[in-house]
Every structure is written in C-alpha cells, then in structure tokens.
Amino acid sequence: MQSDNLNPEPVVERVTQQTSQTPETSLSDAHESSFFLTHRAQLEHAMGFIDVAAHVRMILFEPRNELIVNFPVRLDSGEYQLFTGYRIQHNNMLGPYKGGVRFHPEVTLDEVKALASVMTVKCALLQVPFGGAKGGISLVPGDYSRDELERISRRFVHDLGNNIGPEYDIPAPDVGTNSQIMVWMMDTYLNTHSRKDKNAHKGVVTGKTLASGGSRGRNKATGQGVTYCVQEWASENGVRLDGCRYIVQGFGNVGSQCALLLEKLGAKLVGVQDHSGSIQNPTGIAAAGLAAHATEHGGIAGFAGAEAISDDAFWALDCEICIPAALEDQINAEVARKLRCRLVVEGANGPTTLGAEAVLKQRGIEVIPDLMANAGGVVVSYFEWLQNKRTESWPLEKVDTRLWSMMRAAYREMRAFALEKGVDNRTAALAVAIQRINQVYLERGIFP
Ligand code: NAD
Image (cartoon, rainbow, N blue to C red; front, side, top):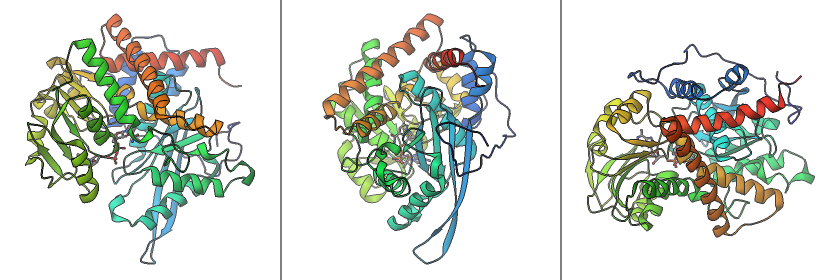
C-alpha cells in the first residue's frame, strides 16, 4: 500500500495490474490501436522534443494508485447486482487528483488509466493546480431507473471512502454521468465524513447543480472551451465563423453545448451523429431543437429538422470543422480519409487513433487535441472548487472571462511551441505540459 500524507487511511487496497500490452514508440505506424497505447505513444513522442528526467518519464507512464471496488447494489426488482468501479489516480504533483467519472458499458481499467493520464497533462497545460485522475463503472445507464442510479452512485462513493476528498481527489461528470449524480456523490461523502466539515467539504465533487454548490457556467464549460479554441483557430487562419459549416459526433453535454455556442457565432451545424444514428441538413440544424429532441427521445434519431444518413456519409459531409464529442478511437484511418474538413477539434478525449493522426497530417487537416480543446470543463471545475472553498458564488461573466483568459494563454503557448519546433498541436501541448511537471519534480525531488 502506498502511503500518502493527504490520505492517511485509505480504505481500499491498491491494486497494481500490469497491462500485457507494450507502448508504441512511433507515431508513423498506420495501424490502429487502443486509446491506452495511443496515448502512451503520444507521450513518448512529445518527450522526444524536450528534456525530461528519466525518473519523471518512468513516473508519468504509470498511475500512482489504481483502485478497484466491487460492490453490491439492490435493484428495484429486489435482486442484487455486483458492480465494479474504478478510480485511477495518475499523478498529484501539481495538486489534488482531478477527473471525471464515466458510466458506460465500455469502461475498462486500461481506458480509465489512459483518461487519468490525459487529465494530468491537461491540468498542467492549463496551469490548473490539480493532478490527474479518472473513474468509471461499466454499465448502460439507460438500463437502470433513477433510484437504481442513485444507489449505484452513492455506494461507489461510499466504497471509495477516504480515497477521495476535496484536498485529495475530486471527481466530476463525464460520459453517462451528470450534475444530479455529482450531487448524490457529494451528499454521500458529506454524510459519511466529519459533521463539522460538512460545508467545507462540498468541493469533494465538481459539476454539481447550481443549487447544491455548483458553478455558473459549468454545464456549458467544456463546450465553451471548445468554442474558444475554434475562435482562436479562426482568427489565426482568417476564417469567418459566420456561415462556417461544422459537424459534431456526440450530442450529449459537450456536443450539444458546442452547437448552442457556435450557433450564436453564426456557424452552421450541417451534420450530427450519436449512438442512435446520423443526420444532416445542409441549410443548418437548430441546436436547441435537436438538444430538446435528444433529451426527450434519448438520441438524435427521428429529429424532424434533418434527414437521416448513414454513419459513413456523416464523416464525409462537406464542412470546415469536425468536432468529435463522443468517445475514444472514433476517427480511425479510414474515417480520416473520408473527412472533408480543415480542422478537427477534439471535444472528446482520445477520439483520434494513431493511424488517423498520420492520415490527417498527410492531408493537411489540423487537429486541436483533447487536452487543449476540452479543458474548459476542468478549468470551471477548478473555479467551482475555489468557490466552494471560499463560500462564494461567482457571476457567469467572471467565470467566462477567467475561462477565456486561461484557455487563450494555453492555446497560444501550444501554438508557439508548435511553430518553434515544427510539430503538431498535440505534440506541442503535451510537451508544454510535461515540461511543467518535470520542472516541479526536479525542484521537489523524490521523497525520501
Ligand atoms: P455525454 O454522456 O453527455 O454524451 C455522450 C454522447 O456520445 C451522447 O450523445 C452519445 O449518444 C454519444 N455516443 C456514445 N456512443 C457513441 C457511438 N458509438 N457513436 C456515436 N456517438 C456515441 O458525455 P459528455 O460529457 O458530452 O462527454 C463526451 C466526451 O467529452 C467524452 O470523451 C468525455 O470524456 C469528454 N469530456 C467531457 C467533459 C465534460 O465536462 N462533460 C469534459 C472534458 C471532456
């Protein structure tokens, strides 16, 4: 068991599982691989452009703690089901572990490990004083009632016990989870920890509803950050967003919020894909109408303001910008060859495979990588955490202004590195982030 001053009594044994897979070393390989391998290869590639101490490389390739909890939950039928929950704490050199909790049938240990590592570099790039973590449970949220989801969420947090906390590890929403689930998680933590600290501990989870301690602007934060990146790219490349056509994969929190914001800038949503199907409308799809339809029907299929098309046809739609906002590994080499856009903005984490990245590079399609593009969520989570600590409630203008300034600073740092070294944006963003973590390791040294 690993000791940690911030967490004297962890209740869960540390489980270290070595993957049987070995990291890739070349980004030129045109084959497809899992997001776990893709991310490791990208880290290694970026480290080739900077000085990183050997021990820091070694540390960053493995998460610090891997927690696995198996817990029973009573279903509405009266039967019990055993769930497996993961919480991976990748690195806390820059601050408390931070990262979302995913409820999705494809959640695996390797996936959560890679997503936790992305959080570490994302926070470092954005200069948010957090480390990286991620959690998840493999389940189909739609298969469970609201009451069952509440019991699953509460029991997961109960079993994580002292392994999370407002100064130690702070979960947030991700695929399949939302602000209500975050409130149940916070409430469970508060009810199972010291009464005198009840209000002080609200920041144990971010992405809560406004009434229960959330921040203004958190719901749209990730989409807002994606939109700021699009605006920076457009101004750098002399592209007018008014009339600019774009497609979105995934119309959940990130995808729908992007669409609502880009619509305000005059951009035209010409195609959308989610788990229920793909649709197009060359004259533009109304974002608010589609969001309401998706909420009511559980997906975009059947929306009256667009025509259904095949999933293949979706990727080949003529547009300027493509925004993947669903899951990992969605843009593979085959999809990358079909795309007819100038820019891919990764609202999702890890949507582009190594093979696809090579094709995009060769075709001159620019990519704004996940750790930059979707960082708005963790930045506003940081603001929520600060507001909870200080018992403050910031106006939306303050949230947006500070988010914009942090996103712009990171974006410009990424672009400056990319231009100076002649590398792609992902390599640049990772290099800037790793340099920052490396410096702190060198200054602080390794205990004892
Ligand atoms: P969400 O659950 O709200 O929405 C997910 C969307 O993906 C849904 O529209 C769903 O239909 C779609 N989808 C699922 N499987 C699909 C498939 N096979 N093909 C096409 N579409 C599919 O999730 P979200 O919070 O919007 O997260 C989306 C992505 O953004 C994830 O990669 C997540 O890690 C990343 N992200 C989210 C946040 C956040 O604040 N929510 C922050 C940073 C990054």
